[in-house]
View 1 (cartoon, rainbow, N blue to C red):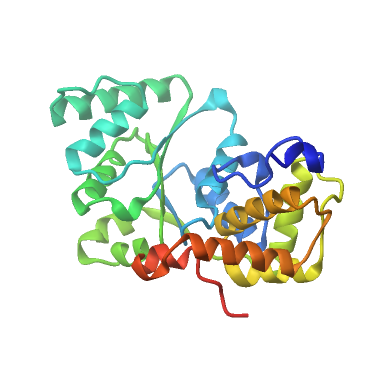
View 2 (cartoon, rainbow, N blue to C red):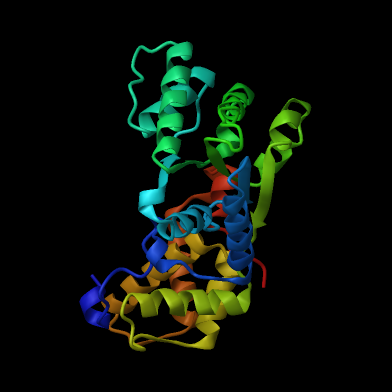
Amino acid sequence: MYLSYYGLKIKPFQLKPDPNFFFSSKGHKRAMAYLEYGLSQEDGFIIVTGEIGAGKTTLMRHLFQKLEREKFIAVQLVNTHLDSEDILRMVAAAFGLAHLNSTKATLLLELEQFFRQSDREGKRVLLLVDEAQNLSPSALEELRMLSNFQTDDKLLLQTFLLGQPEFRKILLGNSMQQLRQRVIATYHLGPLDTDETKSYIEHRLTTAGWSGDPFLRDDAFNAIYNFTKGIPRRINTLCDRLLIMGCLEELHTLSSVEVNEVIRDIQQEFDLSILSDDESDEFKPATA
């Protein structure tokens, strides 16, 4: 709707994770450094936690985009409400292996053969598991057991676990001691600060072909930050709505007045009294 009006090539605030829009905030730079270190070790588990919409998946896809494809096989699991055997089936399916009606023993043999064949071909195998806080203890244990497949000098599978903040508490449980011993790098990705929020918005607009139209006043950036708390996905949702409104109203300058009008529209569309705390947090304005 607003692309042609503002001369943009693509939507700047789409919700799906896109590594082409990766923004290197202070937190994202540190997280990337930990990830690259962990990747260089060719060993164990790497864990990234953060609030919903903090940019964990985009961060990982940016890392994977930098990999030499002929040297890596990387897959992602996004459905994680699974028990122990289901997680093995999902891993096998992600790597393109037979998995329907397979016993646990068969699944493990198929996976081990695949890992060893990949190693003989000079390829490293990476597994990215999103929403890891939803995994059952038995499913996490199966993932840990997969890290037992190794040659004389290296592991055949390296696993990245992405989760919400509560995943850190899960890892501190008594049953997670063996998994914790396999973790070689971990980082918690926090929200953007005020200045980073402004830079993030301008970065995404510029990536989409922005040439200064619409012009966003400083008070607009402040209002966006106060409402979104610096969480990228919330920023994207609000800014997309803001550009739609700007287009409909034929505006070329956007201020806190327009931002607050969009915020009121969002609040009116959702009866916060019937939402859970986690859901309503997505739409509550932050305190200044």
